[in-house]
Image (cartoon, rainbow over all chains, first blue to last red; front, side):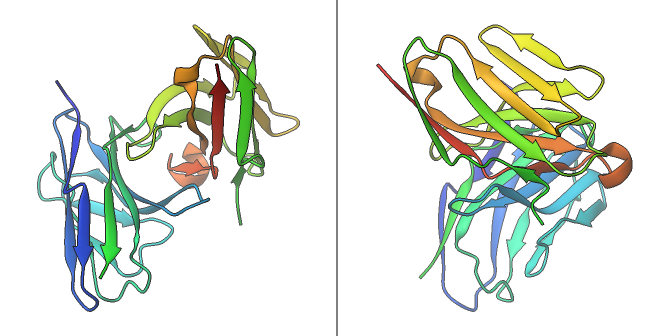
Length: 112
Length: 114
């Protein structure tokens, strides 16, 4: 079955630590995205990638970094510079920009 | 600046009746609109979409209506079923204006009561 896998489902971080969230897709999609969801808010775009070795900042990129070395993988690093990292993080992919996006089941990040 | 707004955070409907979820947008460059459904602790799943050249798109129990002059779209679910209880997000994109990125509303939580 094709799909998007995010791991882990729950993640805890100590203050001052960087943490990396995994996102893998086997849908052969070119575009991948990272969103953040906070209570009572919609999904806000952190970073997106149209193609391998290329990525662009979304609306709330500060304190985050990404890489796109392989088509299947788009890991997100939440750095210590992100002041309010506790949130539900969603990864998505699509055939191309503007196409319907398929989402993973998310990773909930909490600060200890 | 919220370009896509869902002003009703929640909606409760009786099973078998119609559910109407509303969404307003401000950017006249949006040309593609989508609805997603999300269960707790899961990612959103794509439901239905509509291009700005249409005013209606139907898929089974789900119909999306687009009123471009009012910058308003709505999702109708008929008949509503308890399994439809979830958070519904509308999203919009504008290829020329924003490179096709999706802008999401805040979501409306639908509760369908038996």
